[in-house]
Length: 71
Image 1 (cartoon, rainbow, N blue to C red):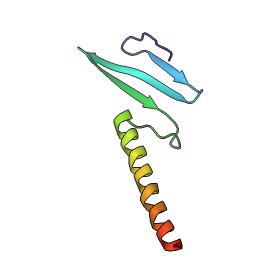
Image 2: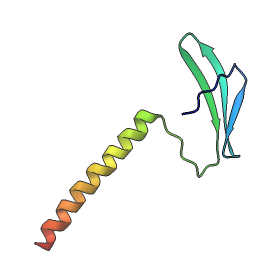
Image 3: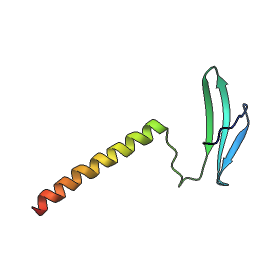
């Protein structure tokens, strides 16, 4: 993991086309802005993990149904 220190208004660039800017700092909360191409998905981690779990659950159910149909 790369750890960087940024101040309000400062930014960093990832992969030449994604920019993350520090918009606001209030106590222990930091508001960031993300500029990325439309084809690059951006999720909060808890949402990303939920999507991954739902995809895994869906694959398990579909796999069982397919096996039942074969038997």
